[in-house]
Length: 505
Picture (cartoon, rainbow, N blue to C red):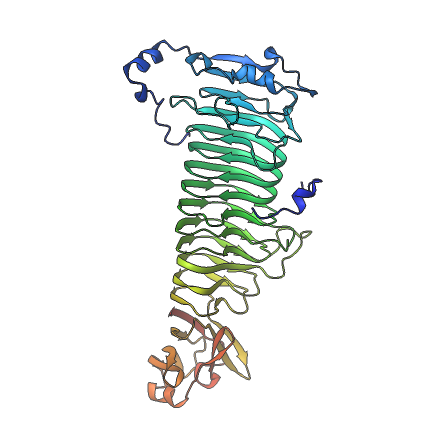
């Protein structure tokens, strides 16, 4: 599973329960439809072998499948059926149309759909119509496809294409597909899908009320791509491994990608691809995303990256950003980082950043706000928050453990804090760990003033008074992305003190 596809297109590619099903949709047909529903049969079981499918890996079985699904028939209740695909290797060179009210069910990995060399979608949910990618059947009945293995497919059309409301796709293993599952629909569940090697695993556009759960994606150029107008989409309990460009992409120029939740997912890489843009990479505008309970490991650069676009609202809660390699035999990224933000409103709360050389958060020229609350920063030696370029961000930082660091320097203690721009203000509480220290605890305000950076005491406890503290003339300095302040050991003791911080800019 860790090898590259043979097709060079995979190596060098240009950038490019059922939810709210609305019952059975019978109300739209009035009383006549209700009467018809009462007379409708309970559905049939069909076997594609009974319609001429060979499953020998040589014969093109496309039309045998379409005879089983009655791809060209006007929709009627007689189409309701479970269509069984027994074990075998079925070559599908064309497109199979699956109708509303039908379930196409294989026998797991022993049902093998060979779509190598296909130019169009292999399965389309809808009625066949020449020159079109299927048309929607009437009514609100669902359609279901499950329990099979697929190989190959068209590079720019989904191996499965759903453009009808009410669908379920589950228990599939797809390998070396171009575009795996393409959704332009509402009210669906996609679950228990494994895709190994693809250009794009999932593409969603103009879709809503869709749940994607228990996905396992390997060696995808792009894992899930959101285009315009995707609303109320949940990505849950899924794993994204070895992504070349982006595991989740909010697409170029995309808008109205709203109420997208990414929950309980794991992201990792074993190769530091130079093409990597981010596990979650946004180039969209006027969109909102919630990321919670996710793990981001060994990112080649930023785990969450806003590359372009404006007015992004993002909340990142309870996530772990870990720069360590996932496995001892995997490549270690040389520059794993946390989040890169440009324009929008961002809340980052209760997250852990660890084992990275720098940059839990970077803010690049733009406008918006960042609230960084709670959580912890471990083994991140410098530049935890980096503000670069001219920016108009409002920044609030509170209760982040490990954000201020204290190191030994010439027998004294050197306090380092992030530089948040010319409006930086830190309220630092310094708590001595030495019982003999002359200052037991002190709170000071470190901020820019007319005379440059100043440190002014708010209160102190211990043998020394505020006036004595002023006489020490502690002056903060800016060193790159940090503010530094020398704390004399004669005042605070020989043991490094503890720091509590609240900051803003």
